[in-house]
Length: 165
Image (cartoon, rainbow, N blue to C red):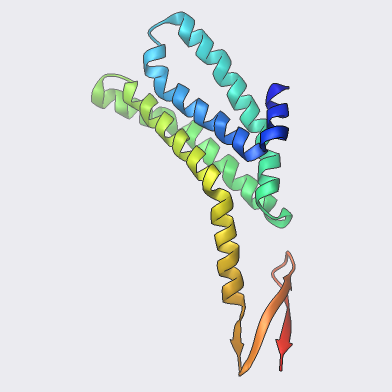
């Protein structure tokens, strides 16, 4: 409930980035937290809360970021990336353990990747705005001596053109 209130007040993107960043920092610190059982127990409870909150905010955040027609594709990519990390992470951690004799570097790597995801999440609105601006620039141009401009584009990729004589 406090996280939902914070998302309403501060915005979903900021709260989701804060959750993701906190989880990344906690994961990086996990190498040191595992040495004390009470800290490991606290990490488990806090990490579970953070992951649950992140998953709850992911859908509305994607709906805020992308057009509705792209939601199935974006959702597929997001959950595929999440699943890839869950499936590939233990193998990478095992390889790191075999190389260094400790899981410390695997926790640091996982935490750094999560914090990097937080940075990408915060930069996404700027990237999307720039991409839309670039697409508008490309779609405005000259065709056979007549200038044209795309007025609207439907979800199926068809566009209406407005021509100037």
